Image (cartoon, rainbow, N blue to C red; front, side, top):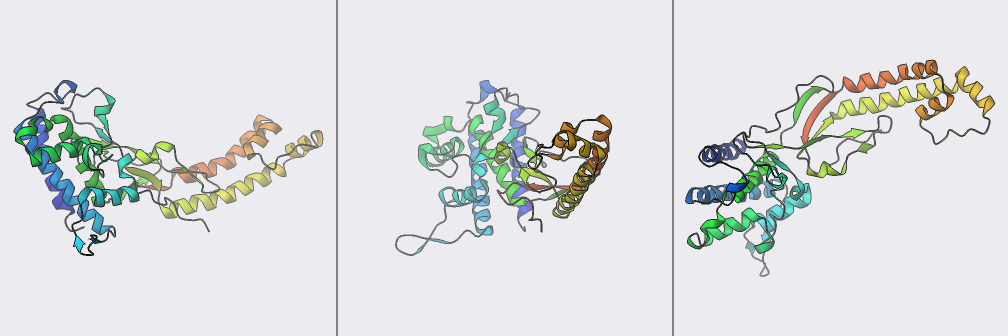
Length: 316
């Protein structure tokens, strides 16, 4: 994107000023309500950036020009139009941002783990706290000085950080599953970092298994699409070979002679192995199982934005 460096450089300038401020004011729970003209200025600049990047994201992701009741084209609002639209696409209101700056000394979870875009698409008193404060100081600064405090500034910056990540839309190659250097969870920020989660799947069916809190994660770690297809298709072959090895084994035949009514149609292969028993037999099966484990461990992984998207391709 043409302006990605521009938006990020503005964000970094704001971040630098806030870090400098944290060297002058001890950022902890006792200071969250501290306000000043400087904090108000930073809040306004941050919120203006949020407005700009929200509108650009809206149009870049197929947001439409809007018209009023008279049929004439009207202004697109950054919150009720743009953030509402983006939230429906990407569930941004659920995404978590972690406060991880070395000079921020917060202890309460509510000040260390933020959902900065929650209610950001709402107007009035039901909106996000940072947006309420921004509107207050923008329209009547003299009467609302105390609205421009450290708490709302940090939350506004977290919202801007999150929107910048979605604007940059970076896909990061990490190497293989068992040999990668990880990634820098702050993505260049000195104040914030993000949550991520591995998109695991059943190796023989490709069925994805994600915990419920995946909705909070900004990034997903996953196998690359070619690696995913290779693992699932190869594991199907390994599984079939494993099944045949079990069913054709002397151990299984002897077990079935003793247990003629044994039903194994709905059981996992390892459950059958446990029923049959015998450590040597289990080791023989596990040697086959190691082939699929080694394949997974040596597969390529990548990091992608969590956009509420289909994570892996269909297996033919």
